[in-house]
Image (cartoon, rainbow, N blue to C red; front, side, top):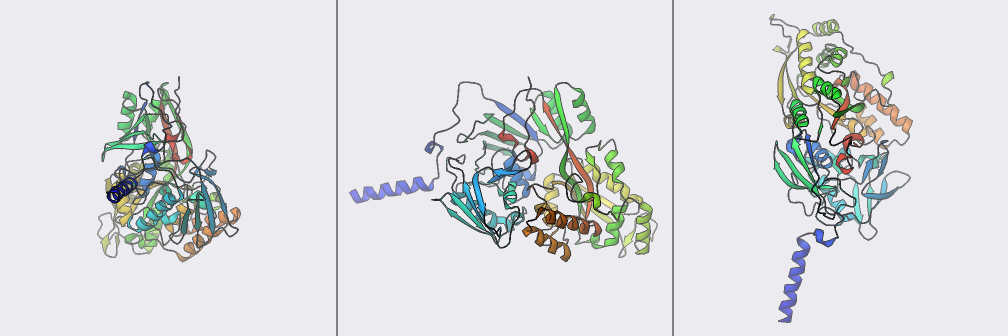
Length: 526
C-alpha cells in the first residue's frame, strides 16, 4: 500500500510540474486595493490580424511589445543607447564572437514562472526552429548559426556566433527577440506569455482587439489595472473616438485637417517630431521591374517635393532619395541621386530602350505587352495617399498601374509572397540602434523583393563584423549608393511622427522607437 501511495504522490508531483508555474508560487507585487480600477482605452492600428507571435511575422513582435506583453534582454533608453532590461550585464570576448549575458534576479513571467537562462534559450530555439516557416526573418537579428547555451546555476546565457557582431546587444533589443515562456504558451498567435507589465486576458477577435490586465507578477508598479486594445485602422475613426471619449489614447492620426483641429483645441496636446522611419516602395525584381530602365524612369517620373508639401501630406513627410533618413549620420549629404524628378528624361530613356506606346492608348509596352503595374498598399501613415500620387505621376509618362489596396495584413502577406510589382510601407530604419538589420532587407539572403547584388552582399557581410564606427558608417554609405544607383527602392520620404494625447490622459512618455510605451506611468495633465 505504501508503494502504491508513493507512486501516486510521485505522479501527482509530476503532474504539478508539467502543469507549469503558478503565480501563487511567488507573492504578487501588485496588491489589489479597494480603489476603482484604472482603465486605459487605446485605439491603434491592427497589424497582421493583431497576432503577438514574433516569429511568424515581424509585426507580431512589435504587437507583443507595444501591448506591454513581451520584453527583451536589452532595450534602448531615450537617448537611443542600449541598456539592460531583462539582462543584468554582459561580457564579450575580444573577437566579438562570444557573449556571456547575466540575467536579472527576481523576474517572473505573467504565469508565475521565473525567468531563467533555460527559458531564454527556449525562446531563441523557438525563433531558430520556426523562423523559416514565418516571415519575421529572425536571422536578421541573430544568425541561425549562433550557438546558445544556458547555465541556470550561474544565471547566464552564452551566445557564440560564427562571425563578429559589432552590435549584438542592439540586435537583441528588437521586438522579434522578445522573451516568452515557450514551454507554457499554448496559443502563440493570441496568447503568448511574457514578462511585461500586461498580459492577455482575452482576444476579442480580428478587427476588434484585446482585453489586457496588469501582470500580477510584474516587478514594478503598473499604471493601469486594465488596458483595452481597440483596433482602429481608419484615421478618421480614431479622431472621432478620441473626441467622443471612447478612447484615451491613439496613434497614427495622419489626416492633416484632423491634426490641425487638435492643435487648435486646448484639450489636446499634439507633438510632431522628426523620426527615423522611412516611407518607401519595394520594387519586385522578379517581374516586369527587373528592367532597370523602367525602374529608373519611375524614379524620375515622381515629384516627391510636391507630394510631401501637398495639403494631403501636410509636411508629415520630408522628401528624400535614400533608404536612411537625412537626419542620421550616414553621409546622406554626400550621396548622389542620379534620378531626380525629370519626366521628360524619363520618357526619353524609355523611348531609347524601346519601351514605347505603339497603339496610342497612352500606355507604353514592354515585351509586347502594356505595362500595368500592381501596386499593393494600405491605409496607414498616408501610404495610400502616396501610392495614389505615384499612380497619377506614372500615368503622365505612360506607365499604367493598378491599385491593390487592403489591410496591413494583405500588404505584408503579399510582400512576403512576392505578389506585387510595387508595395509600399513605412519602417523604422534603426530599430536596433544601428541600420544593420534594416539594410539586411536588400541582402540576397533576406530580401523581400528578389534583389541581389554581389557587391552589396559583400559590404553587408563586412558590416556585420566591422567594429570601427567610422568604417561602419562608410560601409553603410556605400551600400546606400548601390541601392540608389540600382534604383532598388522607391523612396516616399521620411516620416515626421505625430502623437496626440487627450487631456484626461496627459502627456504619455513614449519610449524611443515606440517599443514599450505601456511600461511607463502616464500622468494626468491636470
